[in-house]
Image 1 (cartoon, one colour):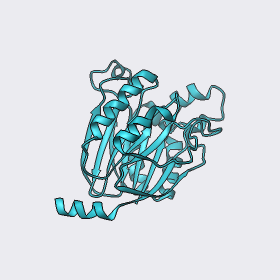
Image 2: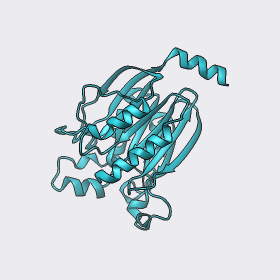
Image 3: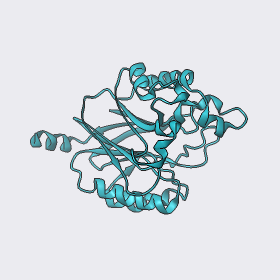
Image 4: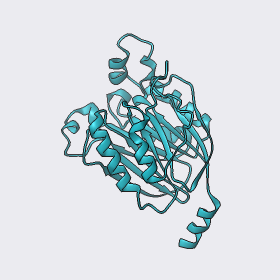
Length: 254
């Protein structure tokens, strides 16, 4: 199987080489550029795609839901959710209330759940289950202390999970990979990026912010940090398979 993780920055990557790129990248139009991202995703031939920073219908995209559009462009099912809870103060602002994350899948989606961590502004976790594997897609807080508390909550979420799973997303580890060392050990997780290649910013990568973490019953076959500047983050492409012993267990439990 193949999994692609990509923070697409609301599809506004066309502003990366222009003055005031961060502000224009946040507020800029993205409808044309999102088609380029769709073509890129399609070329990777991934079975499942985790997308962080997706516009679900603001003025950036002329009210087009990017998750739905990318699902159509790539021929995949999609799951999406708003980044903030309905009672959040951020939902009062039109552009922010349409910010979210999403998953695309060739595989049949048998369950989807949306969790909001107790702490932080960025606290959505999308859980999407297929027959073979479950994906937990995250986008963690910028504040270090809050982020560490979120990682503890994530560990509580997955510690008794029986099925093969992947935790992936933009972890915002501004203090370094050491922030998740205990999480990796406690959850018996594998960080696919064993060469510790940086993923941000895309034009001159220096920080490792994006992670794909696999449960121990997943065999990592290959991975690549892909070089392109369609967004300010670099995508990560993972080839994996479920270990045979786990396949037999899944059959027995049906």
